[in-house]
Image (cartoon, rainbow, N blue to C red; front, side):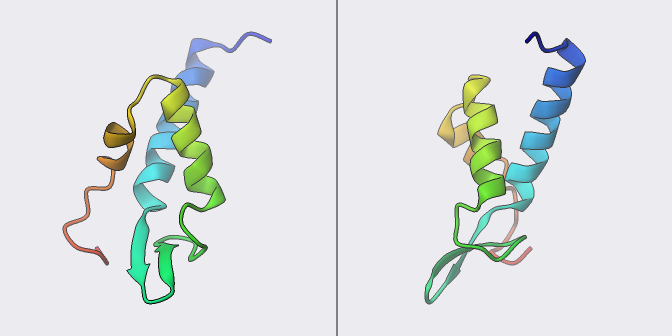
Length: 73
């Protein structure tokens, strides 16, 4: 099955946004997802990480999408 360039771009854009908002926050019981409150990495972040990694992004580039100024921002 071939993917259209538009679909690939859309999938990458979605993955970047998901990686931005499903980021870890520290709790006494361990890291939780800021967005969905599941154990980090949550399913959404894992999917986004895999999509971006398959597109050639490094782990540092993916983690760099989290541009919060503090743990709760």
